[in-house]
Image 1 (cartoon, rainbow, N blue to C red):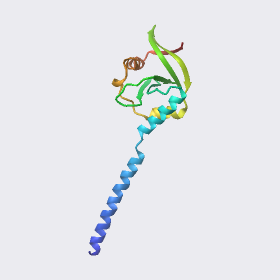
Image 2: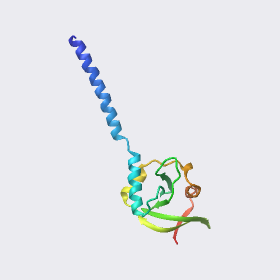
Image 3: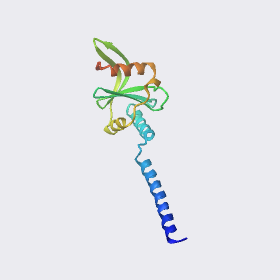
Image 4: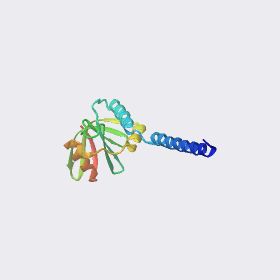
Length: 150
């Protein structure tokens, strides 16, 4: 093998290494949504003392986001997170142009959980249970929201 062939071989190996490095870098930069979701729901289950929590509805600045732990399945034990508080809801109704959300307990949600929720993509809402689906669309319809502890 002459020097020109050796140089060509080295250049080809360097290109291969470059490609492998770029692939590894790309994998490192991709967010790990499954890991974030698991961490978030594990923390939330401890905060709200509900090991069955599997979906949340997140409200912020008139934006609504539905996140479910297992994609493709409707969530159970849905909690609303609004203004850094998690609400264990059990009923809601429209009254005099307001969406009245009745809840049994209210919990403080740490900022790291809020940050993760903002990072996570929204789940497919059509898989939600009927009550969650209706509540989601009522929240999106911009009713004034009032939380009532009962």
